[in-house]
Length: 355
Image (cartoon, rainbow, N blue to C red; front, side):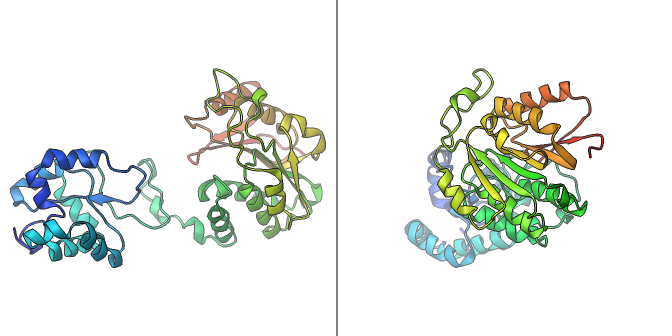
């Protein structure tokens, strides 16, 4: 076997594969699925056999980490078998080559291989190919002035289950309200389904940045998980008590620096009498049919001009009650403007003006 990249693709575990291909594939199939880094496995084999080997191997035996860690990984786990074939230096060279030129690897893989090979990028999620050709030209959310820093900070705390895309929806609703100069209306901003409070903190920081502190922020949650009376059998997949690893004290502490923020420890159905008369933004993140439908019906007529209800988990397979609630609401409110979004949210606004 050659050690030169110019003569043939070199192997990360060539000897082992050639001796026991079934065993190697079996080991790959039982690999830790929680390990999220890309793995590749190549075999040093003549040009005419590349495609066949590629069909056999879908994962990489070597975790392709930044260059600084490659030598250590190879030395600790592969050195004995690689040294026996004189390939250890070539393997390290190949791993670095893969890091630099993942497209070159794709060229040796057949089109019908049920796998994708690409270089993992920091802070990237990988999604189905339903975005347009120009999607890569859009600005990076983390680099958007004002929004980016706040959103990244919110995600980094681990107190929100929303990522940058969904946070950006909420921010844009608030920005739209701020641009319309509706502060004098004294509307409220409400989150229903607060959990650990990370999104509520983001909303508070956004309100500060947009000069909306004359308005009030309300964070509503039982803080004991899903209430049993809110879980509808036959519709909801979640169970009572889910998301109970939080507390109102924790959220109050997070929001203590925002005097316009208020925490309500109760179901939304039992809290509405404590809330303002009108709202600019209502974020419904309950995961359940009953509180979502209640929130839509109660707050829709209480939206200020240009206000919106943002329903989270719309289209989610784990929250079928969300879609049913929105559909029932839409059927009863022909004047509602309802926009499903690829972010897993649904935007609900009044199609006519409301003073």
